[in-house]
Amino acid sequence: MEDIIKVKNSSYGRYEELLIRRDNLKKEAFILQRQYVAEFGDLIIEVFEKKLECIKKKKTIEFCQRKLNYGKSIDQDELQAYLDEEMKEFQARLNDMIKDTESAKKREKVSEIDLIKIKKIYHKLVKLIHPDINPLTSENEALYDLWQRIQIAYNCNDLKEMEELEVRVTTTLEQLGVGNLEIEIPNIDDKIAELEKEIVTIMETDPYQYKFILEDPKAVEEKKQSLREELQSYIEYSEQLDNILENLMTDGNSIVWKMS
Image (cartoon, rainbow, N blue to C red):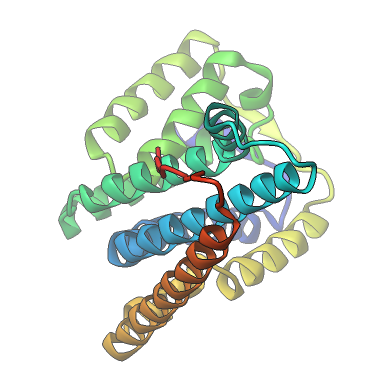
């Protein structure tokens, strides 16, 4: 089955090698992102929550100042409705951050043996249905869906799913009657050059660059200290905003904070 795809281009070997390397780097970057979130997520969330508190207080001050400038009283129901709308996107982002952090902490460790099996299956499936190699994958809904599932399973190191997908791919290709399919990849040298650039970009940017922090205990502690300092700055700013708001409140007006 691995020989089902025959490629005419003499540069194909290099092209396939770069495709696999690019995908491996993307996977590594994905894992590094999750490790980074697992390591720093709680602190990042704490900083973001305090930042949102400051944003909410600033918006409250602006709302109250506008009302007072026009000699109007401050309706707390109106204020709350205004804040709920203004903070909606921020709150959604915070919820996503919390979910991502919880998910990253629950990641399961995979044995070296399983990782080798996963990589072997993936390399086989790349040869068969990678959309940059086999045009049928982009044209056939079943193959395209299988390829999307392969990407997810590969990134998540899901050996069971990869083994099942290997069977599904073989069966699907047989059902499609694909045999000894010859493919000529157009502009393969240009595509090789693009892959080489993409690989460099992945390695020079986050989240791949997170590895240099995560592999260095000193860098990890420095990052945490930086986040603690950022948190403290927001705490101090929040207190300043409280003072400004207190000075605005006259005639018995008050604000009850509900950080929902």
